[in-house]
Length: 253
Image (tube, rainbow, N blue to C red; front, side):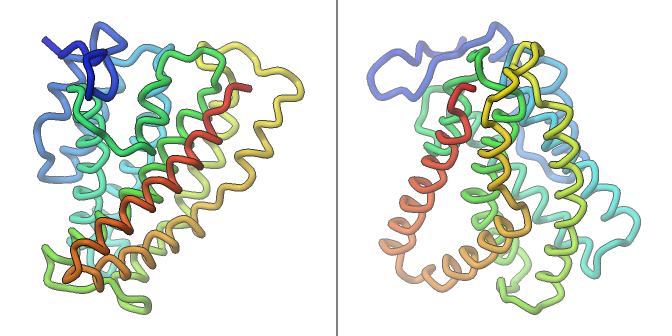
């Protein structure tokens, strides 16, 4: 049974009857990109249409399938490194969701989405983009650092790994633009008001710029590895800024 997260110190409470099944799905560490895809497919199967988590997971599942296809087709100079990055990256999403579902502290940028999963006044695309915001701006620098440590490399601009990393930008842009059209309805599927201003909020998002910032932050974290206090302070600040952006994305329209 999941804990009653209304108790002091716990971050949120289970919102849906199937949350224990989602928790079980994210409690096993993925070892391959197909594992990451499989976990997200399980989440998609359990989530109903009135759960905002479904729509971020739907978008991220499409992104991960695209990465898997490109790794399999030899579309990267170092497919093993890109596969490792994808696994580490997905693991941060699963860890944040696991923490939230068990009442442990989760990053504030993720809680901006998780605590409003039932809010029917929010559009599906807002849930999707709030998750993308948290995952790229907060998690991606950490995933890059973890991947570099595992491969005895370092995050540097101009390397083959950086070139592989940026080669995905156009694919991700296409997927996000498609999502903006497909998910441009309220959580339960009803039409948005004619003048919602939502397009102005989402228009500020640029995946290439966000991923470039994530790579630069990974380089900074790499150089701060020997100064844990500064590294922790930087991550707190990064979560704070990403949380502000996430809350702005999640304002009901």
